[in-house]
Amino acid sequence: MFDVIRVNMTDGSIEREPLPKTYEGLGGRGLTSAFLLNEVEPTCSPIGPLNKLIFAPGLLGGTNCANSGRISVGGKSPLTGTIKEANSGGQAGSYLARLGIAAIVVEGQPQEGKLFRLHVAKDRCELLPADELKGLGNYATVEKLKDTYGDRVGYVSIGQAGEWKLGAASVAFTDREGRPTRHAGRGGLGAVMGSKGLKAIVIDPAGGEAAPLADKDAFREASKRFLNALQTHPVTSQGLTNFGTDILINIINEAGGLPTRNFSSGRFEGADKVGGETLNRVTTARKGDCSHGCMAGCVIRCSGVYLDAKGNYVSKWPEYETVWAWGPNCGIDDLDAIARMDRGCDDIGLDTIETGNAVAVAMEAGLKAFGDTAGAEELLAEIGKGSPLGRILGSGAGAVGKVFGVRRVAVVKNQALPAYDPRAVKGVGVTYATSPMGADHTAGYAVATNIMKVGGDVDPLSVAGQVDLSRGLQIATAAIDTAGLCLFVAFPVMDIPDAMVAVADMISAKYGIRMSVDDFNALGGRVLKMEREFNARAGFTAADDRLPEFFKLEKLAPHNHVFDVPDSELDRVFNF
Image 1: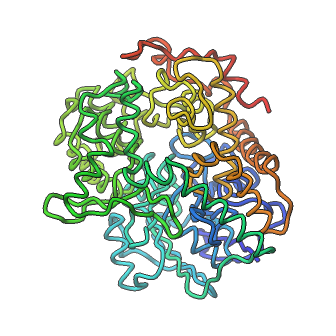
Image 2: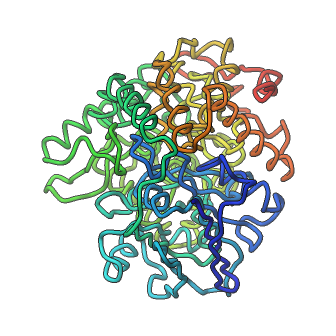
């Protein structure tokens, strides 16, 4: 029913086999992490032949469940050295699931300099030379592939950053319009794809079918309940739908937790110029799209289409993290410039969070001044050129800090922090410190409860309750990622009890099992334990579950707090 495609880049062989029983009951992040734990030596070189790159849709992929088309990309991270799952929207997850594919596992390594594309279709899978794509950005790569395969397929690709095996390299996925705008960004997995000599994957869904359901009636009933939760919760039916994730700029700025000028303060005077309200207003005036789904079946529609002043397409709506990384964190308040840099990152194939942080650290070092918009674009262009400076910047914030002797470098396990300062939002600080993935807000989004008061109310400036909050959210998030659901479904799930029940009921109805909410949470716990075990075998200890010391020493304006969650508290996050 569900198969694994194994692609050996060393000898070019491809095998299709049923999903081994060892991996049954897993999808998405759970499946990528299980493959890595069972089949990859944790001390291997991330860009060597022993690492593997896994693509897996979630447990609910291929169904008509709303927002279930996410895809997980897994591998040992070149950036962190840990286990890594990076998550993306786009069409690939749904297409693979409808072809009956539970995972693509890419292993081995070709002769140096060889480049390939993988074509996946219903009745065949073939590896073909792709030398003509060498050195192309994602946009040009996709356009060239369209000449052969057309518009009715999904494309997965890397840009120059992936080919050069840079630590900030992402994996791009095409959206519903065939643009490479959705990215599995975090952890440098684009570099793993580059190390495999795999420039692109073409997924042809022709002949694919909706995933089989053990109990169609029960699935239909549960999916309606889940859809109702998404369409009635104010965050997923109004806030994100009208203003995108960028609505958070003004919210987090007001809360004093918006990292500004390389985490030197918590408020940015130009926040409103780059916030979601302005993004909506500018897009409306230019006749762009203010409510756009990144994948089929999305009912939240938190994305949009950004046009320039002449009405020309620039990029998808920059996400909150992207706007922050290239905006407030670099002292920039120019929305048009941020959209151009978002487009540049998508094309070169870079994680916008990691790269924006790297540029902010470079500004701290004096390479450019904070607020120098043209200077930031120049630094991004250096990465696209592959110059020595560009390769340093494309290796991430940690590398830039070491090369230029900067002390304030906001990384955990060498991965740059996202757009919430842990001194003002302490719950997410716990997540940053302890997530097996390195600093990652999506691993346990405590901002929801600390700031937005979704799922309860835990004072963001207090130590009390933060560890328990982060633990619960990390467990739930691992389960949501395994199901293949968009992270934003967490908002109604946290506030509407039946939403979580509906998810468990859909999985039960699809696979003919009995899954309760407790079972669903246990699934998340199982995934986290696998990831922690991989990291332990790779040499990571509790000492790696810490924030940089400047967060403990430097008070953050305007609240003048430090991150003061004791190490002993951090060490009990995974006591479950």
